[in-house]
Length: 252
Figure: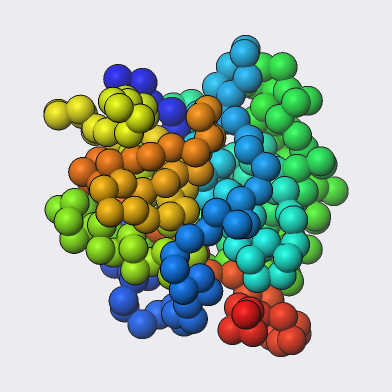
């Protein structure tokens, strides 16, 4: 089994959970189909090394989709910056730590710290400590945007989790853990006895499978509901109170 960056971490009692009433729930996409707002495809590895950064790549895909849907803002965030600030290193990181790093340190544009400038895994997760200018850039984002997240589920049977994902897709793309990757007849599945190794982004539900926007080619994948992901998260983005004219509730 090859892990690609997903590390399970037990949810904390104070974590938000879908249906718990802690996050506002304004539906943003009535049919749960986020494909019209997909960002450019990005791969978490090149021919020299794998970043093991799937928790960052998947999470940022969801946030970039939300920026396109809410503000028609085609943001491209730096996975390298997020990886350094979240402490991501091989063999990976937990989704919770990555999400907390976004809330604590913000995000920067990919052009300021791109993948292509790193020739090794050591260069990819550098500079560490992060340069003061880029830290300040991230804090500027944090000061404007409130990025919140909640568990759609952590554990449970696949039928119930399917229902939860379909519900959550009304509000945001859903990031979730999967086994990477085994395919049969064009659909990806989890072999019996295997565990989740990867974090990807669900963008549309069908009856027998969901579509994932992924950080490995092919970037659009059909994934069997019986994959039965261990964990899933959905997201909410709004501008802070000094910017009340731009928030999720005003999206149409």
